[in-house]
Amino acid sequence: MRVTFVRPNLYDDRSTDAMEPLCFAILKSLTPDDIDTVLIDERLEPVPATLGTDLVAMTVETYTARRSYQLAARFRRQGIPVVFGGYHPTFLPDEALQHADAIVVGDAEDVWGQVLVDAGRSSLQRIYQSPEFPSLDAVMPDRSIFSGKKYAPMGLVQYARGCKFNCSFCSIRAFYGNNLRQRPIESVVEDIRRSGRRHIFLVDDNLFVDVDKARQLFEALRPLKVSW
Image (tube, rainbow, N blue to C red; front, side):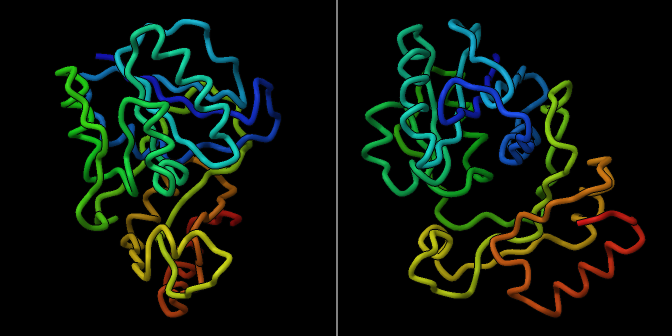
């Protein structure tokens, strides 16, 4: 079985400063070794007119939704099932389901394995959603999915998800409620070591929401001699 991860661009054009899409490194780490995986990032490369794959998994943000739907229509005409994940399908599932065979609502860690099993049986469910927010304790992205791609020389690393504040303009609270989950600091340190990057972008929703934990993280980063 082969799974093709697709990161759409706003339109069919290339970028010179694209950063690694961390979500696909996480999904790669959750994919069994006997499943072949490939990443097509439209910011870096054109999406082929035809794909030799068994499943397309696409992350969809609101600003890429139109392009995502165009690409999904192309794949589905070839008989390839498409599963959407990300913010846009989570907030507008009924709209997204008009353009995909299945969607993942919310975080994917607890349901990705079932998506793969169902896809292998040609029996995808319409909606996959974890009954609770998955723990981040075991998250360790597999960045081998980025091999050979010319991303900006900066590693994306996530320590925590969520925020305790309820700002009316922010989508984080709408996505996660008041839930805040943090990875073990030693796991974050190992993640950075494995990335091989000297420049790190900590992509937390609110890195300083827990000041004491943030200080512990920053102290743990000192020996790594990275810029962040």
